[in-house]
Image 1 (cartoon, helix red, strand yellow):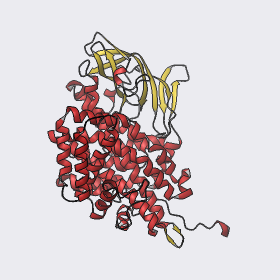
Image 2: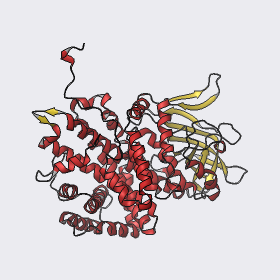
Image 3: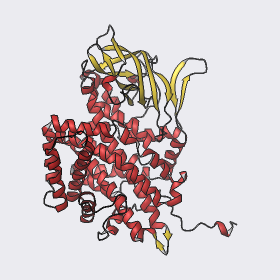
Image 4: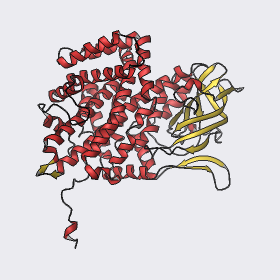
Length: 544
């Protein structure tokens, strides 16, 4: 018999056994809104199946195990042969296999593929964000490879396959492959034009031998990599297969795995090339232009990944507050806690709504939507990823001491939260990219203004924010020094316009009052008390 002093009361049950997709109204409504009606039933069934899998106790356990048992590097086998392999816990392979089979690498080959994949990515990475990296890079490699029709014909069917094959063997003998990317070097970082890796042409046309290093190469167990190196004609993009067609290992020396703050289930490495065989992708000297579409796609995945982390953090906070009682009532009914939860819910819904709008633009593919993405993607990447960490911190605090304990899962979310702001270009890189779009591509600003203008007249605070933004855009003096402020406003105005058009009035009102109208403090939980905050919180509550 258990001691009476150890009777457990007033503890929230674990948030498991639920449909992660169906419980997220902002996400489900975005799918309904943007997807072709003829595809809706199939997509809903597909996403709900993935949502139930993600919310299951088994998959939640896989995520915890993959994180608790990070990958290990084996440079040599027992006989002293160099093998450069990375060993992963079985849970990692289960997660990655499910992500591939769920279509998270096949957006380019089916109708409505980008929106469906984006929704799936938001759902699935709530189980464990680490496996999102290889899924993202495999998905994003497709547009870069399509610059070379011969390479695309060979590799794209493998990249978009729904089969996960973890064995290292020639890609031609595999039903599905994964891709990684190697751009940054220790002396250059984001300045990839400072790369020193050398590409020497070989006798066979389009083939080269690479010599050099990469400071960050994530997912080094992948079957192929897109890398940048200096060819005779300048910085060029190359495809580096992990295993050559004759079955021998390509020279791909993994020096070490990074010991990271978060994202611990995924391997990030330093690699050396020494006569490494590679095929050119695109023309010599056009490496950045060739790989830029891959970068844009992975930047969108950074937005999606942060939206996913925020959603899970907010869901955990609201779920806990629904069951936890203090000072004579449930936490969720306390006015001050309700203000905090509503504020967090607004940030999460705004991130999800914006991310899904960007995914829908990819499916549209029109010239205007491409112009819109040119400005909106780096702006969203800048802002949404930066909001992730404060959301994770505040959501953790909602659980009190329970949230500070590893078993809650909240520390894992917190450690993961800064990642997407750093990957694929940190904040300053994104802000400068927005400036380049404004200065060199006037169609991008026109498309953006057309988008936000669709909500004009619906909310006076949004109208005022648009007017102020136009004033700021008209003054280009000292533009670089205030680029972050400008990009922040671009993102907030876009989020506000989308919420005014698509979200319930209570959500749009609260967002515009706080983020655009200035009736907000410096921390979460400082929304105007006169707003309908209970409705905002209830909308975000996950129903188990």
